[in-house]
Image (spheres, rainbow, N blue to C red):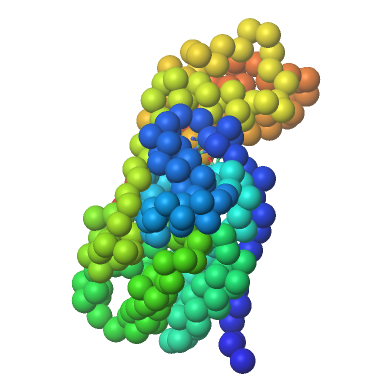
Length: 269
Ligand code: ATP
């Protein structure tokens, strides 16, 4: 009867070992993973586990990756949906998708629900440019209603991600909703080095490659930028018929990512 059932369900293979840096976030989520692995144990202790977690941080800092790592660590199915998909929809479709997704997750509990770009439906109400906000509001109301309606026994954890926590409707942040906030910062130099190591695991590197130096030369890069840099360097090596990626390829790729980023900034906000 429901017109739409377009959320994703997957089993995650990602673990915390695939996430570099972000020690505080990992520690917080480790606790949730412990709960999802054995909710009964926590129930007997009368412990309440946070229901809604808000992951905040600039683009590409690993919000989706972290949510997937939590699912992988907990052996829990991962249901995901993106707030931005609701904007163009007919009124009611978003709300029914949210309803279906929560129902399915409860059936499969322990489970994780991930709502990416929550700000696109969760902007403070009444601040839009006028018109066309019914769908957004209905979807938001459905999310809030689902979270309020949780049975405390149900082991479903909802994770929402945003890079615009400043625009969120205060209703989302009330106790019992997304009341646990975790910030993912841009990686510092050691974390950048670790991210570069993770993403070069399957890339043949020339002996002279110094990832420590590359980490020092990539201040301000998010994890996604570093992943992109490695891939650009591998493509460049391929075009030049090399059998390994050398420092020269990596530095050229770095410049390319920097320029690409600047273009986005100029054309963006
Ligand atoms: P957006 O806000 O753009 O949705 P995001 O914060 O959800 O971004 P992800 O999609 O999780 O970021 O990150 C993109 C990719 O960058 C990841 O799949 C991963 O390969 C890499 N990456 C980002 N952060 C890290 C990290 N801390 N460790 C390892 N890889 C990372």
